[in-house]
Amino acid sequence: MSDKPLIIGVGGGSGSGKTTVVRRILDGIGEENIQLLQHDSYYRDLGHLPLEERKKQNFDHPSSLETELMIRHVEALKGGYKVEVPVYDFAAHTRSEDTESITPKEIILLDGILIFTEPELRKYMDIKLFVDTDDDVRLLRRIKRDIMERGRDLEGVMNQYELYVRPMHLEFVEPSKRYADIIIPRGGENQVALEMVIATIREKLTSIQAQEETHNQ
Image 1 (cartoon, rainbow, N blue to C red):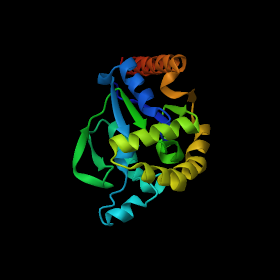
Image 2 (cartoon, rainbow, N blue to C red; image 1 turned 90 degrees about the vertical axis):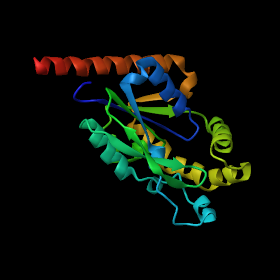
Image 3 (cartoon, rainbow, N blue to C red; image 1 turned 60 degrees about the vertical axis):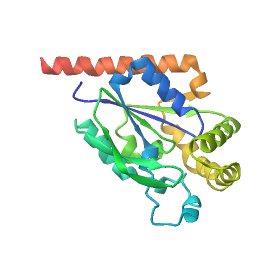
């Protein structure tokens, strides 16, 4: 592994297709070379609140995430150290007592809707990708995900979207697009853009490795 991992951020709205883009990068570069770190893992533990109160929280505001811990973990991974990432229960809105051990690799891939809103986190990113998808498509994907994967009902998903998701997207996520190096319209469906992104990552990684080999000679 190189002394300095390549750090890539993948941002974009909820349901924009970030997961598909991340999957294509993993497949195109090789999972053995990439360590994925998801912002969603860092939601704050709400176990001190009754369940009904937890459900009413604004999970799309930056304050809902312990980004300061994620930053410390990025710093540690960049320095070659293993970290223990929280495991979050999206149905109960609590953190598990278990953690996931994450080790450094050639590439550290950061994924999350709000990662570009945080200046301290942005400064670590060598490449910033923003996945840009129409609002109606994102809403339909979010409904499907939250019902099938996170134990929510349709009414709850729609209420959360109207109260928090859409306003927070307009206030925080959409403006963060200006920090992106590359914007990917239509997400994982945009094969041409994804091929260009993967080629750019390979080129950047090769350049870093070549610089290190020269430095070590």
